[in-house]
Amino acid sequence: MQARVPHRWDVSPKQAAEIQLALRPQLKKQRDFSEVRTVAGADIALSSLGPDRRAQREAVAYAGVILYRFPDLVELERQSAVRQVSFPYVPGLLVFREGPALLEAFAKLRTPPGLLLFDAHGYSHPRRFGLACHLSVVLDTPGIGVAKSLLIGRYQEPEDRVGAWTPLVDAEETVGAVLRTRAHVQPIFISIGHRVDLLTAVEFTLACTDGYRIPKPTREADHFVEQLKRRAASAGTAWAPQTTLF
Image (tube, rainbow, N blue to C red):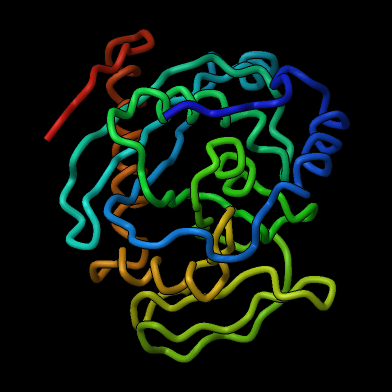
């Protein structure tokens, strides 16, 4: 699947924030799809090139995307990409650090996903256009942000039962959902990416949850990219990933 990216990635942080605001009007906050037959989980791992400050800024990104059949979540395909990045770490602008590698991995998929799950924030973002929104828009595919930690907003703790959730509120606007995917563990933070409403985002996140705190697509994508990173470290060089089909 190919993205249509209407901007450069090698920009300043100020320009990056302006790009987010310029793209935000393309965001669709309503459900814009019917049947979902495949879902993809995407994540990224970063490693520095060395101990000095410049090397830590110019990191290597290991991106992974795993495609699953839905709703039984049987793995169909996984793809990855390794790229050097130079955009600095700036909260709220992580898509400019991680986006190019993720899009390269998506471009290798042989089957376009019907729904995307990102280990990132979407609408629950200072400019209401986090990584899950940005990449879902340029891929023009329904997407959901599934984040492990809070970026912005306030909330009341949801009930301690699977499926319970409370609104995540910022500046008097509901920007996401704080969802309990497993009893007796911390909730996760769900937000829309593109072409999906919040209730639908919660529904599909729960449908992709298999007894663990993190939904299977993003949990396994996280394991995948950490494996890529460890394999590169043990080899002492960047690893050129290969296609794996199931």
